[in-house]
Image (tube, rainbow, N blue to C red; front, side, top):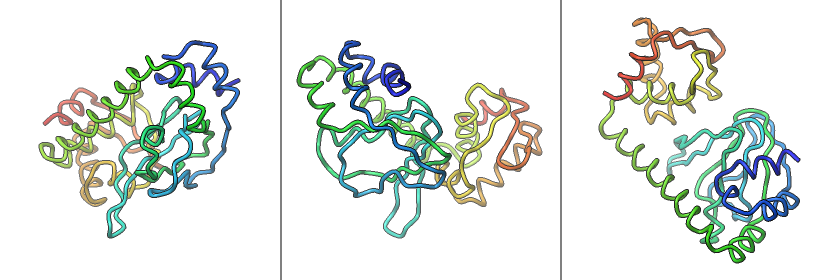
Length: 221
């Protein structure tokens, strides 16, 4: 089943013996969401972790005055909602479907039993959490040391991956939240890259990278 294959390819579950992954795959519940649907809200009770089977989701947090900051964009194979396995606390962020998507939900109780049976996988879990912490540290450093054009270039390159032609699956407000700046300042940075000949705007959220080397250099300074 597709869910079984995705679990096997996800780092957390790849550390488990095949028979255990097979068993967990049978316990997965596939859930479909349309673009814009909330998977869960910050503060909701946490009962399951999720793996993205198809589509993209955005993880975001909100300030007390309602402003949104997009923390991450995940696509097929992305894992989220795992923190509650260990502390049982409510959700720490919002997760929203950026496209029509299918998610594999796995109840915490099933994961906890697998961990109890195979405590050695805690090492993998600690490594995953350390990677999340490093990503948070990097985002904080970016906010302090990089200006808006640099952060915009970095996020565009991350969204593009290894493709020169790409589509941003975010609204302007969501992209601004991911960059950590106002929509106006992010749009000005994109317009600057276009004038410099580094980036071409194709319309409807689609872009083409014309000078990846310059974009990469600008993302670092």
